[in-house]
Image 1 (cartoon, rainbow, N blue to C red):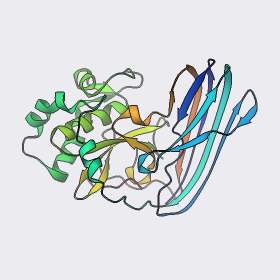
Image 2: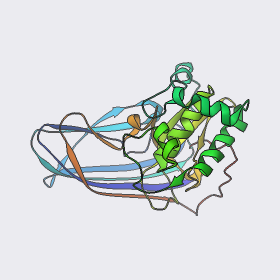
Image 3: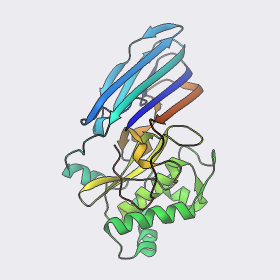
Image 4: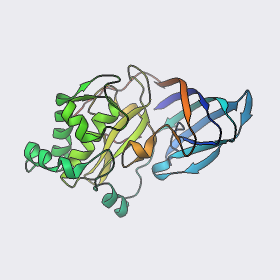
Length: 268
């Protein structure tokens, strides 16, 4: 499957701002072709960001601004084919079963056991997906950037990251390794960067999208981590920025694949 994705960001920074962007598609083995372009300008002059490698093929692009700046970022990529499954990493299976900042599985544990009883494996994954999908309302702007799974469970509403955090916390509470993936999602409406969960079952990572807003088979990975603190598309490491504009595009050649919410699907 060929996917064409892109993002355009415009933001202003204060002096002495260092920032990291996660907008580039993950470079993974298995793709038959991978073409991309990243253009960054500040005050109309082109800059070359430093690229730092993260886990799961993710890449962060780092920029530093000693003076206040007006910044424009344009990213485009065309990716053909399907990524190969990564080899099993035992340390990841430990890391991704622990509680984290936005997926407080220790606090969610009684709810998970009360709701899902003795379920395990694919049955548990599907039950968690269906429960979160049925319990939460997708409401744009309804959550704060500091909300985690507990807040989402109490308020019963949120956006994609909130759906994913709650699913991750419920799965980890039952000792299923789970992580958050940032993706480009053809078919998503309204179009934006999208967050989904991944669970390790039957010897592989499978993607779960409790929002049900886009077909999983068409999604393209950007990065992955414990929760959204690891995967934010734009963050500062000193200084401050103000996002002025964000546009995201994602299309799949030949149309969107059919989506069966109960099928096991790898993020490719």
